View 1 (cartoon, rainbow, N blue to C red):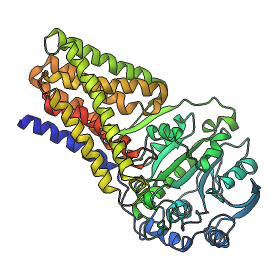
View 2 (cartoon, one colour):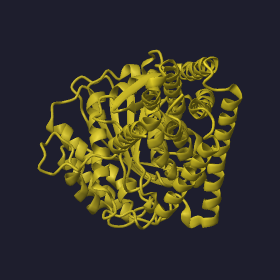
View 3 (cartoon, one colour):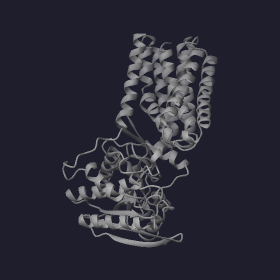
View 4 (cartoon, rainbow, N blue to C red):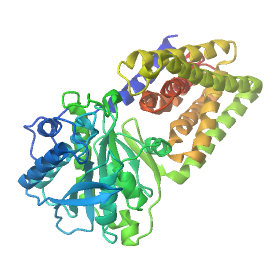
Length: 517
């Protein structure tokens, strides 16, 4: 029992560290060096601009635009307005350029100036506008960059990406390499997540690697592509040009409401958005942009890569490796099961039973969570206030289902529960590698860790608990911290969240309950 407690403590520390590392950084004070991004310098801009709703075409939108023009001029830039008609609506974009010393192309810092009619849009998207202004100020305080940096503040995003569509049509140069860094918000708190990159992202990931503690991973990109959502970057990607989407998404109950005010906005989120923006601008601004934009340069397209952080280290590998890694994880697990069976440590039918019941537990958690959401009504949705009781209930449901699964198998050999949980993860890993390869690492790597841990446990029974605990580290570091994000998705958030916690809990409980072979 003490050894099991040590193993559980290890996994708890790993999971806690992964969750903590995902938090946004502390706001940097206004007294920071001029070359740094400071949320305290950006927040007064938000307060000035987001005093009232300012939807496209309104007098308030014109006031915001005039205010930003004055701020850009004060920074030494020469902003220009570009008015176009898109879909029968007149939109006015703001564009300004910070010239580079020897440009190979242009890095575009993009956000939208309009808000929804229902709220003042402090987070969506005034915080990003203010972050761009603070980033430009910090860039001008440092040495000149190689490439041009263009500020693009679009109009009419909330009405259908109108300003972005106009800029892509009229302002995006066909033969000049261009990388667009777009910034959004779908809540008023949380870290700024890099949630989408353009296809052929290998070169962009070199820039993301230069960001101190980048948040996000390729699974967010994979999930976003399945959701019915768009940002201004969608217009850029439709034209075959490269870019990166970043946003903070926590506390979505204030999104597109009167509650999206400067008072509700997290200063840490502004700091996260701005420090990520500044690091990307500096890295890409000193890079050769031609390989990143094959449509403009004519150079060969770059490959797609999977990316994520594991224990604080940024991991990347070609997306083409996703299926081989998932298959390898499944084969390692099969080898471990065969080895354990030959040594009389488990029976094949028990593993099949454990896998089937683990799948049933996952489906049961999803069904119970969905039923809870349906019973609670629309007030329990991801965009409602007072979400915490429902989140706690979803987690509690998952815990009960997983514990029931473990108790049902308690008379089986210890290796059986681990093999059953790992087999379920391996199957999901292979399936996602085929359908959404950018997300496969969430399942394939935990399955691989469990398979390797089980192999060592069979070969060295005295070290079984240690081997299984170490093998479960990818579950604690990758899968368990990911589960809370599911609360923020649309639709059946409760069922998905309960299923995510159950999927992470199955191997953790298996190791805790078994821990022996």
